[in-house]
Every structure is written in C-alpha cells, then in structure tokens.
Length: 421
Image 1: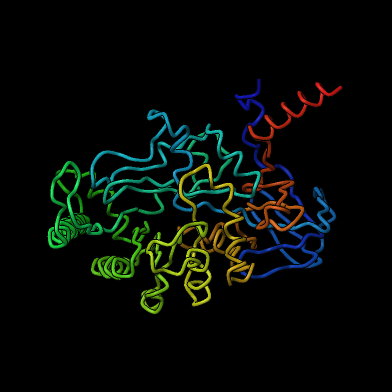
Image 2 (image 1 turned 90 degrees about the vertical axis):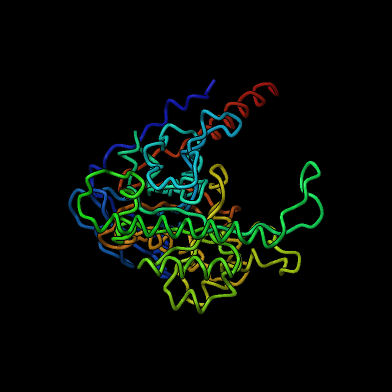
C-alpha cells in the first residue's frame, strides 16, 4: 500500500550554485528569453540572460535545450491546506462561526502534511494563498510555498491580506417562502442589506479609531487584527460580483484610506474605467463556469479575464476550492483562447498574483534577486496536452515531484501488467 507518501519529504536547502541553460524562459512579466541561462544560488536568482555565460567554478549545470522554464504558479484565494476530506468536518479548518472574524489567521491552520499540494506541484503550482471563508469578515490569508515541514517553514508572507464579503441583497422571488411563509419583499431585503452595510461601516470606523489610539488599556483582538489593514501592511480583499456591489465596495474602502483588491468580479468588465481610476486589482473566478444572469453573454466567464487585462487592469485568475487548483495553468490556457496574449495569461497566475498579494519583490517572476522558484516543463505549461513538469525548484531547493496519484498509477499499472503475463 502507498497511502502515506512517506517518501515525499521537503527538499533540503540549496547547497550548490546551479546554472540551467538552453531553455525558453518565460519570465512572467510578458518577456520571453530564447536560449536562456538562469544562474541561482542560496535560493536566489543570480542572473537571467540569453546565451548567458556560466562561471567556470563549482557550478552544477542542467541542460534544458528545447524545454520551457516558468515561474512557479500561484493559487490565489484558495482553502488549500485548510481542508482535506470534504465529507469530514474535522478536516475542514477554513471557516469560523460568526460574521466578524478579523482575528482569524489561516496560516496557523495550514496543514503541510496534506496530500493535495504534492499533486499541484506536479503541474507547476508551487505557491498558494490559503484563505479563510465565511461571514462578513473572514480573517487573514497568508502566502505559502508548497514544500515545507510546517507552516512556519511554508510562509512566504504571513497575514498578507484581510478578506471580507460585501453584503448583497438576495434576489427577490415572488410567492411564498419555505413552509408556506410569505417571501420577504424587495423593500425588506434592501433594508437588511443596508443594515448589514451600516454594521460593517460601524465596525471599520471603530477599528480605525482603535488603531489610532496608541496602546489601548483593553485589547480588542478583532480591532487589533485590523491595524495592518489601515497602515497598509496588509491588503484588503473584498468579494463582490455585480457592478453595483463592486463600486460600493471600492468606495467603502476608499473612505478608510484603503485601496482594495476585488475578488469574484463577474461584472467588473462593466466598470473598467472606475477600477482603473482607483488602481484596483481584480481576482476573477475560473473561466469554466456559467454566467450569473440569464441575459448575460454565455461566453462571458471565458472572456472576462481577457477583457479586463487588455484594458490595463492587474488581473489574477483563481479557482474555487483546493483540489481543483492543479488545473490552474489550464484555466489560464483557456483565457488565451478567448482573447488574451499567452504571456499575459501566464502573468495572471504568476506576477499579477504576486502584486495583488504584496510579494512581487521576492517572487512571481524569474528576475535577478528574486526567489529561485520556477520549474522546467517539456512543453507549454498552459496546455494540458504538453504540460510535463520535469523538475521544479522552490527557493532554490530541488523538490520531489512524486505524489499519491503517481504512486497509485504505478501500483495498479504494475498490477495489471503482471496479470497479463
């Protein structure tokens, strides 16, 4: 049996300088370097150049002629590592009871022993943003790399963003509600939504006042957790779908001196100029989805990212849940078929994501001085037919690309091959 994956341990720290030569290097910022040479040591990229020279001293060489090198893909706004078996409550750590959970930190619940990250690494997803869910204010996410012994080792940036959901008015449906009760009127639904917005505004106002108090006599953990949001050390991600809610959410954040990141953003294409004027990044949902409204363009989920990115917005591509994250590069590939340049599509899961999370100075692209987090693929990594990750490095460490899926495939391939003999 091979269920334990006991042979998959985090890689040791890089001990020798490594040079990779001959590959096509997809930098992540839109640039492509043919016949590129990447030199890296101590976990950092020393140089990236076309036809680069390799030092004559003790340097390990990897010849990657005809292959492609990509920055590690980043899975945004996911509950990866916070959920393991969906049908078992004890393995679900991404949601807390209550509406205002600013003090919740996903990083302390992140499970580095999960079997899922290893399957993601095999498709080039080397980093993620484990994110709490539920309530109005869900708590703080962190950015992690996917080859670690514990959450302290995994963390690239702890508490990178606070996550909240903008209050939405449910769609009115006439007739009777459940159990024969009359459904709430549109007026009542609007009143509930406005009450929720007022409560949210009050919470932020009190939290901001608290952050300006200096050292309070009594610690309020929820308000304490909001301090980095007001000082700019922590981003604010707001989930909003419709154009009305997107505008309201951005204006709400501006009142408190915050430039938010909008997630979901189904109707962001209707308010592009507004988002550009306010320098708002957008995290769009997976393109393989149905439109929200009956009269929407049936192909809009496929085109949304391209429309926004071609207009000049910083666009990040995401997928719901955790186990589907292995398909993230192929979602980016889908976006290329619907109007976005392939290198720009690559940026939606690399450098753009790093910018939205505030980690672009250290990761997200293959540039001098950044973490040596990238992988070598035999073909186009955004195409499921040619994506074949042959070697991957996280902060310079040559990681193990085995996983439970590969082990089970080998086990039963051996079994049925033996039965035929």
